[in-house]
Image 1: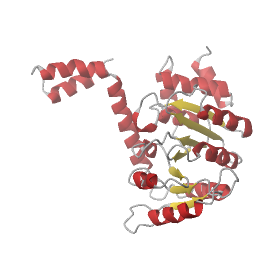
Image 2: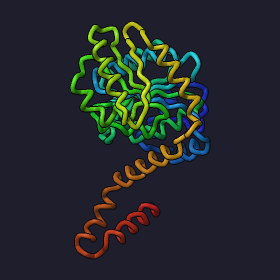
Image 3: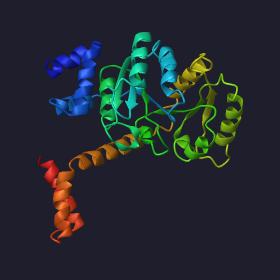
Image 4: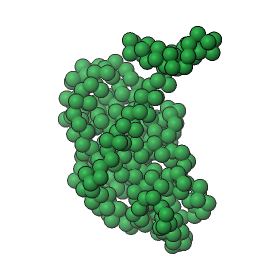
Length: 300
């Protein structure tokens, strides 16, 4: 295995295998993990992150394949495709990953959630920071999107694309209190289908509710025919220029860090359990136990 500095230099030069090795170090927290984090955190991230979410079956991966062609013409683009099971399962995500790699000049990575809640892998944030450090200017993140609670992608993304498709019926009602309200762009995929006309009308009515707290941009597309793809890509790029106006990146970064810190604490549950037993026995108060847990972790 090459030295960390050699891996980073090679990855900066575009070596895909070494980019993958660095992301694996982050995912597995293997040897060199702490040094790598210290290195990439020294450089402020400037990458533009677009989250793609929506229920299974709406064509998120196919849409990303089309968008990647558009974005890769002007951006150094990476795509992270979150898999609910394993990135090496040979399932649909792997198939889409291989198709993407063969058609566009884009770095593509499948990443397993490994049981984390919110539909995202806990290593996602650090991987995005790494890609930024390596010179990537844009990353598309496809979340699992299995339900309305899968909204953690909000804390990693500058813009959110909510993908839906015709014939969803009650599913729109079920998700609009969760995923729907986080989307900057509501995209109706499979717009070439006859039933898309009715679906478009229903969605426009849903996102135009007067008391809605967020304004959505609606686009009808077809990943199959290419209809609306360039329009959507142009809208996303144009919105990038608005990023500095009323920028909430600091709040988003704070929320992301809080979630990751809680996740680190949770991963050390044997420490928490040890002090919890003393609380149950009356030897410590909860506040005392919390302080001792933090002290224990700091001294590790």
